[in-house]
Image (cartoon, rainbow, N blue to C red; front, side, top):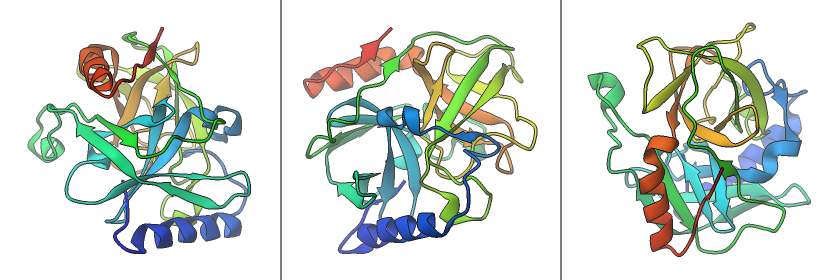
Length: 249
């Protein structure tokens, strides 16, 4: 969730890389595993207010993330590390938050479609590729893969920045939903944490069917994502306005 005015973002990125150099072996998300082989379809989003999020690559210059990662007056940039491990910050050319996003939804117990699309001023390197999206609506008991660049150990910011994943089963605490998907906490615990918002939630075939938006209570508790299928029209219309298109299964 972060970008910089002056040197702020660059300082955040440099501090993040320094922290990674000091960190011990990563465990992955919370209780998961490092997944560098899958990191080619995901980047980070940094904000000038200090926020850190994950994002899904949809085109060479377009990413999908959570709405709260791109809303407000903060300045936002896409972040990744180059082949030498140095931080790279990319300015935005356009930013669109879903009209159904409600910043006060959790406190007010209201519905919110927590999604945003970002278009970068310059393309990402060729090593990044567009993720396949899925309109599927998962059912209770189905196993999905949650991934992101968030912290691996709660309270340790230096454990942020490595792409990690964990498999978790779908639960329906409020019955079937056409907006959200909930993932049961794994043992250990295992689940999303700070910095994983906007990261992919993928089905068995690897296509992304939701993005992480919220975790209930402590890291590794029940994780919530926003389903992409029901928002396909908004995604496709927004991308078409930019001359881009998502890859749907």
